[in-house]
Image 1 (cartoon, helix red, strand yellow):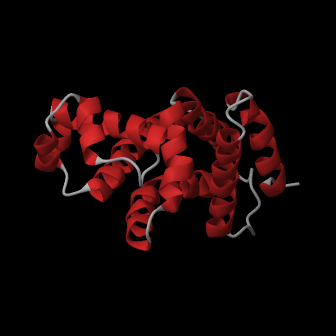
Image 2: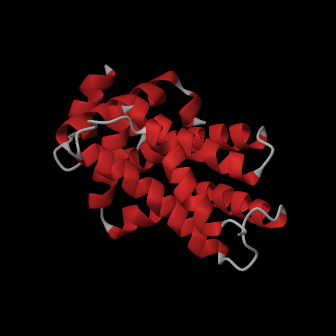
Length: 194
């Protein structure tokens, strides 16, 4: 598998940095290769083109993130605690990697329809985790039974996504992770059993 090879990881990490620093459209494959310390041709052993690199960046980073979220949330007892953990980890991962935050919040949004569709399919397992937490909360009678799960999932993901985008756009001038309890409270108050 290509993602188990050391050069693949070097290229992925270099791509995050180059795209964040230059923007997707101005990021030449040669810049990514130079940053990764590999020959230009080596890139094409792992990736078809620049678009494939961007999709692979998201797939690799999101895949790791989903695994970490699934493991961490499974250790929490209640759906509310799982949701707080998910929020903290979502904010924490992006706060810890400035370049990754720029790529996911800004550069991916400027891509073409085909690329956005690929990104959306990579995102699906994360949305399934959110659905699972919401359904668990309903089953536990923590969350209202009459809520529309897909709508609540969109609201949760949309809130987290927009909060991070705003943080990036404001040049990360405040502690993103410290917003986790506030965001958690706002979401849970809206869907909790009264």
